Length: 585
Image 1 (cartoon, rainbow, N blue to C red):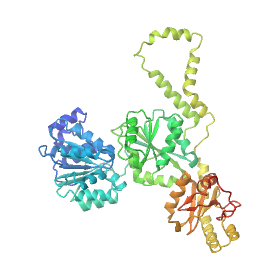
Image 2: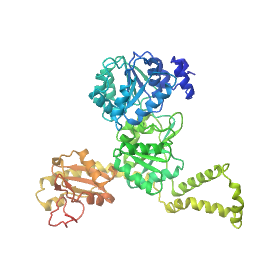
Image 3: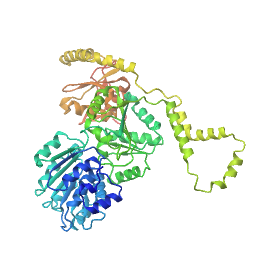
Image 4: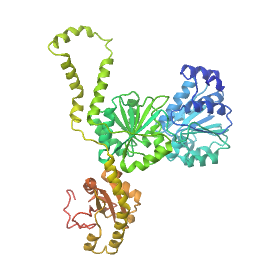
């Protein structure tokens, strides 16, 4: 088996890696380091998150840097503050026995004045986020003219975050670089374009298949309905008493709302999203790293660059829109050879997307039954018994209190003591799950839903024909009422006086109504947009919430009118005289 000594790196680096317990390099380290030691070969390394990419470029950089030259020779660009700090921390450990080499991190959210001061002291390796680096370049506080080596770490993440122009600006401002090293978990088209434009005959190393799921991760999914998504999440958490994980949501509103609900119910959880200040973000991450928090709930943007060891579970409260993002989410667990679990809560309508993810990741995903209330209580009970039996009683003068305890419980049987202990620990669980319903979507339900979906295209065609006929007679209120019929079974059809002339496209309109109503996309059916108005199919149970959220609100200075086109009221016509004024109007 290959060792770091066999890779040809400096003996002082070998001494440091041995002390860190790094004896055998990972696959990406073994293949990348011998190439990068030359310092003149452009390089592309594709490997999953958590495979040791920092050492793969950090050790060669330290080996070839000129410690006597006190100016920036190497530039490492990464997407987030957290990753920036992590890279510097690891390089500092590697250079323990190398004197004269300085590494500086520059990132947003910290004093730029202090960072400029550190740069002026003389530095060979700069680790930076794109935005802060460009700020320093424009202030002429950093000179990249003599940069020889540029490392783009987690390049796909940077492009996902919209940093392509920034990366190209940085590469243009390092004209004397001898080599560019690009590390990424995936290889989207944008990265390939950047590599062709700025790299010369790069040596490409692929560790595992691109987008292939980490074999240390067990991929599981639970199928439920839209209204049971939160209850399913709660049940999954309760069924895994020792869980230490990250829950991913699509929006910061979801992250904050779920965090608040779970906190009220006694869970050690906090949210990480874009509205937090850097100080608040650091506090949350500190609590999560020291396990004061058992769970972290985050959006994809907020979680980028997070590297926390020992995460047991990643939970997708909702599937990501971009299939590649699934790889990044799941890569937070199953690191450093440890086993991890990635769980997805899937609506029946999302199964097509889930099958795409499964195919692209080239890994088997396991369908799980949502635990029953009794299953949860049983799992919690066994976990408690294990903790009770493994409790450390070697410290403390417990013997002093044993006689008093024996006297106090003299008339209480052993069985009663155990029951009372269990009652104190499990009263909340037993009461909550006493009448818990079955949250699983059964095959019969899915078959019925499939039949409705098969009928959907024909029903949609007939509705479209009627809509076109209705459009020709929109001038008459009475005609309009007769032209719009009920939608698919289980759905209501809502009219709203907003359309394409208000500046909406279908995607932006969808996001607008969801943001206003705090509803999930799964409750919606077909959306039919016109110039001046639109019709929305929505699950009947969610229709009134959407109407309450939008009707009477203002959009660009005019009142929104929304009502149920399937009810007895006018479909799309609401006069101010007939509407009762709302409080405050």
